Image 1 (tube, helix red, strand yellow):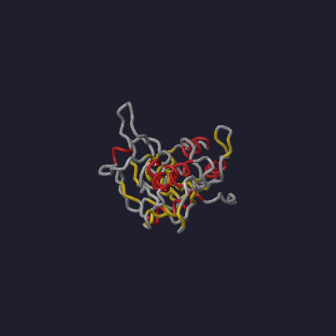
Image 2 (image 1 turned 90 degrees about the vertical axis):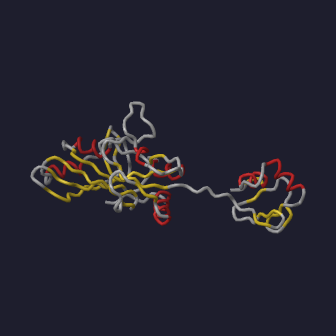
Image 3 (image 1 turned 135 degrees about the vertical axis):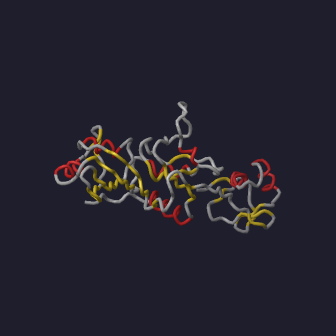
Length: 246
């Protein structure tokens, strides 16, 4: 995106816009080897120099964190009732991050936090399509007819659900563990989907977001995402939505 040269110089942290104008008028600024003119615009990729030295765009380093949220913590920055918040678990982290989406108080597992507003928007926008996986423990032995009911839930509050999948991973006489894969994040979505099918949720744990997994992060602990993980997450969050799978 084009922008006026003086604004570009100020955004780079070189000086104020007024001081940038004086540098341009003095002939000390060049763009692509040519002496710049006041009011000139520059585009990404242009070579801007001051007295022959490159002027680099200022890059803001963002922070990306993976937290294994335990039960009993709410996904908010501060609680007026004095309840435990997820930020209380980020001991030693100086960056001011915000949660990406929510996990309710009785849910646990993978929660991303960052100060990258563009990524937060991409991951939480209603049109999002990044896969999220949950391990859901239901009361009783799930199979046959009840599994069919769980898979048949098609809408919440009259709004159609995007395609999702449900797989049974483990069966016991008093409980069953299922894996839900969804691509949206409505309020209490999976709990409400289970309730709509007449099932009782005993435990709900998010284990994956966009291919990122908890990867040995213990409950209540956190770690920074690697550059490779950040790049992969952004690639998924910002890509065009694909056609729903059958």
